[in-house]
Length: 114
Image (cartoon, rainbow, N blue to C red; front, side, top):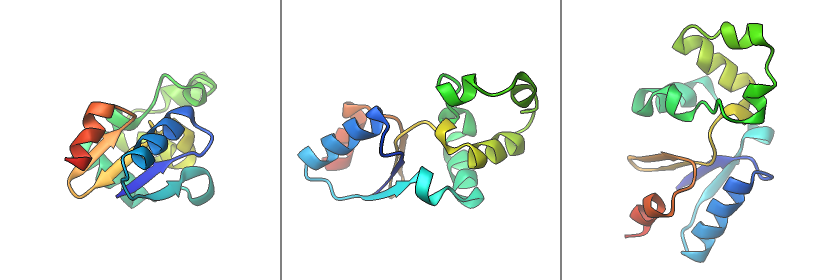
């Protein structure tokens, strides 16, 4: 299993604590240190649609200049911005086989350990 996120994010911390408490092994990918590839963003988009993981509720989006927000007209525009501003990716991202989930939801996570 691979977990993508940022170490100082409270939701990521909650998810990692849950995984540890339930003895789920994972590899952590830190967006801040390692970034994210365009290929990975395209993969997630093909499985879930970028709207599912582009966080417009967070501070990073809210702090963008209006002209940057308005420049997002296509999927390619959105994915390019997400690659540049990884803090806008809804966290954590959980990948395991065909399982792909954005955020923390204990009910969804239980599907990983059943």
